[in-house]
Figure (cartoon, rainbow, N blue to C red):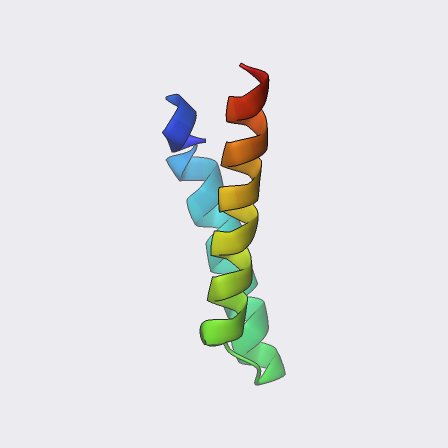
Length: 53
């Protein structure tokens, strides 16, 4: 969202906190694999949306 000028810090922070807390309670944590998946999907969305603008 920030790539396109939208401020979603408050919503994103709450979402990420819940996701991290859930991972901790399940014993899975965040992990590099999850970070890579998030970044790859963000990149895909940015490229797809940019291509339509």
